[in-house]
Image 1 (tube, rainbow, N blue to C red):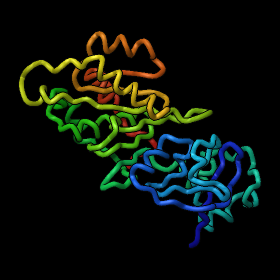
Image 2 (image 1 turned 180 degrees about the horizontal axis):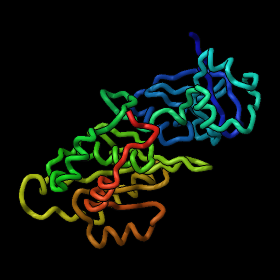
Image 3 (image 1 turned 90 degrees about the vertical axis):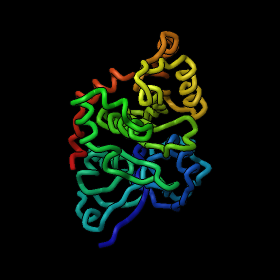
Image 4 (image 1 turned 90 degrees about the horizontal axis):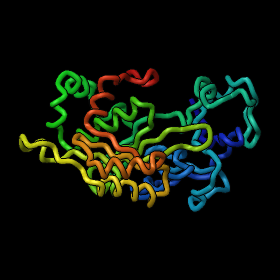
Length: 274
């Protein structure tokens, strides 16, 4: 059974002929994850329409890759043709229900593994989450990597699409959290802080200073994205919270109590139950 790979323009509501596919290294993949072309990515491959180049990544139209199997193509109740507007009642959801694979509706979880970006079914097990629900103090015993995976999974449960970065050379970002509204995706750089002191001794967890919040705010600004989010298994100083309160649309801070509250409310998204 054959299939057509092409591009769907959400803003123009039409399918566009595929112009090329471009394998990317990890740096290139990260570049496009925060651009309007992020839904043209499938793992480390960037798909672009005919007449479009990698240098046009700031282009504002909403594109995503599309894949139509032959049986789906002939099952549509409109004639398929490139560069022709499809019926207005065909939303992304309806196209997806009709069997059209779309980059904008593909998977909510991606992770960097061995310099590649791959789709994953979950970042951490429900066993880990249930264990912390039963014994909240167990969160202190998590490794840095498990803590980041836990936070990433909880953000998916809160309705975000998540790209989890590798644990080294993350440029100040542990994962990207995205939400799509009616205009453009909201993209947040998330940094997870899990102080070693609370795992290695019985001392009180270290209070994180304002510098931590300023750092993720600066990272978000440097990448020209919506804002920054800082999460910790510890707590924040008064000055750190005060700084975040100055820019509520651009910076948010969450601590252990927020994580435990998310865990208590945690449920698999209906469209992601295995």
